[in-house]
Length: 329
Image (cartoon, rainbow, N blue to C red; front, side, top):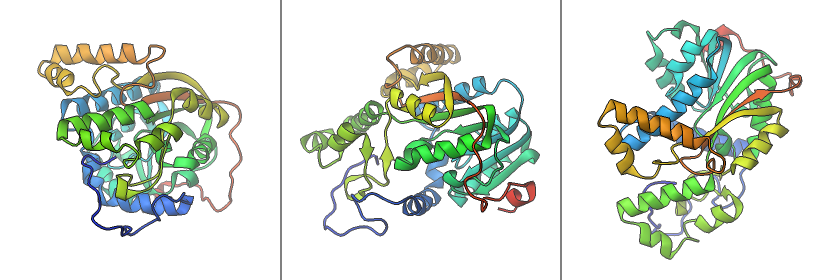
């Protein structure tokens, strides 16, 4: 949800999908592509600035690095945008790193930022939908989906995960994060308290879709009420069940910053000294893996392995990815 709520002066509907109506997959993808192309700069700054933002990024980075300790040949990043985790993934991929994103501008920024980095010669940049990956079946060793990609897919989240399962080899690993209802509402109310609009939201929670999000776990597209896209929130139990249904077995999970995700003072003070920052990271990781904590913090991140045989390709129209085709994008 955007940071500052404002009500429209008129009842006119913004250009794009009709607010409040369920979107088809193609309409949702077109809408998200426009949004992320326009907001690529802000997306690149997601884990910069405030100490608590840097903390969230550092915890995801450390979880990711811990899950890719063994050399892997082909790493696929889905929805990586401007390349926040590209350096880590370039280092993990022994033969090939493939970045797949719906928005062209994010790919351009990631490609520019990676020039000269170790392993950059092994990278390919592909504009494509996550539900239709142009990759051969069972070839990837790891897939990374950080940035609430499954939640952005809304009702198509299961389709997206099945497609990722298709391109992974048996035993291949997926690292994916999810947004939870408690973390989203807590972050929104925290911003409201800090920026002076909390009472307005609490006076009319239904208008700001809080009641709907809490009751259903879904946020409909309605920019008149701060919902710039459809979104699906997950409890950890729901996410784990979804991964099982789509061909994965969970091996690790961690809440992101359950101690300080929504308390700016903790991270800000810890960031003043390297030893205290290291201690905070260690405490967050330890508490984040405790039972009953996964639905708190700033969402949660999950590592899972591909079980069984990879499914057959759903359509012959999905061409096998080659280095030439990828680099031409």
